[in-house]
Image (cartoon, rainbow, N blue to C red; front, side, top):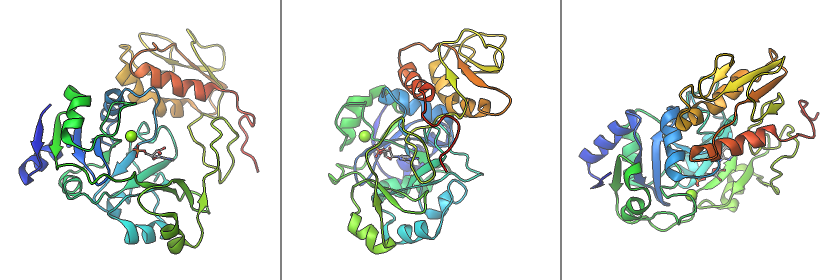
Amino acid sequence: MSIVPATAATIADAAALLSAGKLVAFPTETVYGLGGDAADDNAVAAIFAAKGRPTFNPLIVHGPGLSSFETSVVIDDRARLLASLFWPGPLTMVLPRHAKSTVSLLASAGLDSIAVRVPSHPVALALLRATSVLVAGPSANPSGRISPTTAQHVADGLADRVAMILDGGPCAVGVESTVIDLCGRRPTLLRPGGITLEALRDALGSVDIAGPVQPDGPRSPGMLSSHYAPALPVRLNARDAKPGEALLAFGPHDGAALNLSPSADLAEAAANLFAMLRALDDARYQAIAVAPIPESGLGLAINDRLRRAAAPRPSGKTLLP
Ligand code: AMP
Ligand code: MG
């Protein structure tokens, strides 16, 4: 790890590191971000590993402009309007995943939507312009520690977890980005932040405010599902598949439908988790059986998501009318 002052040359180096799958910390107008190639499952798994979070929260995907997201998310007129008014700036839009999207499913925690933003900090923008990839990035601090507003804060918390820390000076201490969900017919504010609700209402006419989150409530059209759950029932801590089940293995196994990591590597398992759950979640099977995952490191976050996926759902497979 090294702290380097942000210059044209070091920004070019950082861009190359990102394209090579490495993690780079960079300043934004809010806090320092921990960036990795959003399309690279391993880089995204490394972000979660570095943060040491016990759960996978969906990450914001950063790009240099609206057009950089054109094949990642479905951009409608509302999104175009908000982008023209508030980008670059502290507004994050949650939009439906594009059929051609290559963004890692781990970055969106398995959801069918992706959160996108164009930051206004000149170093962040220069980095995003210089690299060929979209950059997934949460704040560059270990889970539970305060958000980093200087390069030294990042170094204190993440030391050898990042390939480079681009020093752009202290962040203008700001609030987080506003998060608005545009996946449904009615725009919904998910998190207040730098762009005000009034400004969004002026632009869009009306904006709902997300109600209390019901983590395991029924999913219905128009309701944001807060986490990914397969349609099929999920059985945890399975050693083998019962008839009709697809086994999602971890570690060496001969009879598995898919294997999260034949070598029992938790980062590889995290990288594969959502894509493999989705691949097995279809009519060929009646249930998904998942092998035991160790409760350590990234295993905590993997097990958290698996437990949520396995939790009984009141509406079962059916979406409400
Ligand atoms: P942070 O990176 O700490 O600024 O937080 C990102 C915020 O965006 C969190 O509140 C996430 O829950 C939210 N977010 C990111 N992606 C999605 C998504 N696909 N759907 C809903 N919320 C999202
Ligand atoms: Mg944070």
